[in-house]
Image (cartoon, rainbow, N blue to C red; front, side, top):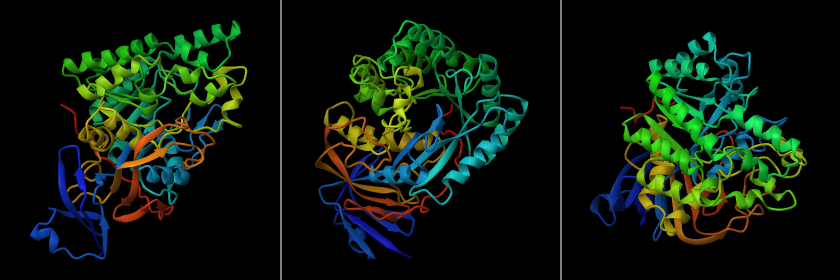
Amino acid sequence: MTRTVIRGGLVVTAAEETHADVLIEDSRIAALAAHGSAAGESWTADRTIDATGKYVIPGGVDAHTHMELPFGGTFASDTFETGTRAAAWGGTTTIVDFAVQSKGQPLRAGLDAWYAKADANCAVDYGFHMIVSDVNEGTLKEMDLLVAEGITSFKLFMAYPGVFYSDDGQILRAMQRAAAGGGLIMMHAENGIAIDVLIEQALTEGRTDPRYHGEVRKVLLEAEATHRAIQLARVAGAPLYVVHVSAEEAVAELAQARDMGLNVFGETCPQYLFLSTDNLAEPDFEGAKYVCSTPLRPREHQAALWRGLRTNDLQVVSTDHCPFCFSGQKDLGRGDFSKIPNGLPGVENRMDLLHQAVIDGHISRRRWIEIACATPARMFGLYPRKGTIAPGADADVVVYDPHAEQVISAETHHMNVDYSAYEGRRITGKVETVLSRGETVVDRGEFTGRAGHGQYVPRGTCQYLI
């Protein structure tokens, strides 16, 4: 048995903050003991980590990533190897990625393809959601089989007609099947049919720059789709998780549903909390770096998102990490914003940006851990194995220096992409050491992990349903 002791730190979980030492035996947390206690002082260890003056926090759980995603004639630039390595650097020790069903193919074929992409390539642990892009009788029967296999969440799209889009009837059928089988429906809530009309009109009128990507994907079309998804979920008696919420009006729809006691949940992402349409409007096609869907919104929406995180009308901050290089990928859309691959890099930056939000007074320390670690683990059936520091949990632990200063830059990040969405941003707080199931993967600023350490984690069902 290998024993590691982390001494002297402030252990921060969603539930409490404790000055405690942490004992790790092999891959699991074995015990916590108050600093200087007889129990803690009696521990012997193969390795001792000094966390004096630091936080000891659970490894982050990023429940929304897209490694190697095919999109718009190209692929997301991070592989499972490069993307999970970057996640580790940023203090995230579990990702839940999206396997994709191709039109006309069974869910199983898509899932098996994603198993193959990830197998023996990941530096940290991983699970899968299933994107359902072709709802039919065969698909619906497969959903139950996947839930039994630990794929307990299914993503549907009200956007991207001809690619991922499902109509209201298909959505209703999938929701009914999920409700009966214990699955959670995740929804990309934008009115894609109406957006396609506005895209066509904008291009016809010569409005081709990246900023028009945001202008055609209107706030009201996110709010309308969010409302419609909630009502369909009510009809089906199904739980609903709305991904990448970006607009105040969409938050209001979620808040109203939750006030009614419905099983409705919302996720936002760092890009909506820290970036805005000002970035989309950057000159010389630089705005293409910030094209994602839902799009960045005017800055005034940020206050509503922070408020939603404080009031628990939004429960999770994930990244929607889907990187495309500026050179050779994003520039496929020069002269036509609709051809810019949708997605931003961010899996490495999430924990640090949310710590900056603690510094800035938007959220508390415990809320930081709640929205980035504990709640995503509970939402997607990984808790208490993931998302907390407690006896029996996986030893996914981060020693975090809350006083270290850093500047985010493409020159120093580890994501396989040629720009940073947060280039030049100064933040306070930095990951120092990362353990994944007791194995050190980042050691005082040096990567010591390896591809293949990360294991597939079957997930239970959502732990929040009432």
